[in-house]
Image (cartoon, rainbow, N blue to C red):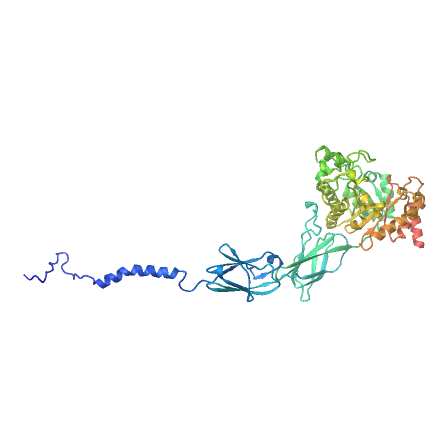
Length: 563
């Protein structure tokens, strides 16, 4: 036996017939290193200091990379990624400051002027973005617009340089509440594109008193403008009728005869009178709730009858003198609807009107009630809505409290109310007038009637310049009641002067009744001539008993024909 060699044992019976062979040591080492090498490779791939750094991410650019006036306000660009905290950031190659933000830094671009900009970020890698700032809005000018009648379709024309679309702006031009669903659906029109010169024509199906237009450029900047719809004004020569007078054949028919003969062109028919009663079957919810509906006439039938006679219908709404609304509101605890004393009591106890006579023009619900009535009447077919008692109570202002008035003066609040109403009634196809005191031309704060301001928001003003209501010496007239021509001519001249340039019509209330001096046809005719001599061919005759002197109309017509 040799000590230098150990023989391998014989193969077992199971291993016989195949070759038995061990792998080499080198192969075993190599196989053992493979997982280690794979792990090292993964670590190399994901290591932040290996390979090419990722490009910084820039956020905050508009979708089209164009900032307009709206999107630029407060705009910031944020930069995220490796090394951005120490990055060099520039705009058009000029360094800009950054401030730290979550996961990156921020560049404030809100103060940049219009132009093209390139933002460059040099961190572990470099990124650039180009964007544009365009904040100059398009130029927009509107041409004057005339309509055949209130609410008739019109076409608004004008120029909108640099605009891509022109459309109606449905936002309220006055900033006021137009009483919600009292108004019909808004004016209908789609957007139009200006031509190469910027001119456009925008059809409007249902315009109100004004149309507001918005022009938009390619960057989204906008310009708005508004235009008042001018409506031709007819000659109104009307006589006043209460609801009960209309229901009386002996009072209604003589007025209709004057219309049929062409001596009058309209009938003034009361919608709501000084008592707060509504003459027809109104469906305004608050009117029915407080028991104001009396239904003495059918509104549609009355309007049709007057139209068939050849006249128009002026619907008078006595606004803020309303005992029915005042009493119902006070008893229900809704006291803000009522004008109060500084002690919190209803105003009027020591006046000729009496307590709970005046409602509060500054109260939203009270305003809504009257706008709703005006809208309903216009929709029924009244050609005009004529407010009366659209004022505060006469008396010392420091003795009256108007809840909800805020920082406005009484005059400002009432003017805003007329603007609200006009938009609504115009959209329903009616005009708006306001009856005012004669003294308001020179003393607007005594009853809160600012005539020049009101003239901007109504179609006509109806001054009550009855000669019997003026004191001796007014306008230099010694005895106004005995001098109807003089006092009428001089007082109306004031109204013409203070409304010049507003486009409003003056339709004076004239006196056809006797209060001190006996008024016959000559005295009534003298007032008509005085108005005509101020270029005012329209008028409204007042007689509380609804009995009018047709001869006065003949005398005035003959005298004016001779002039």
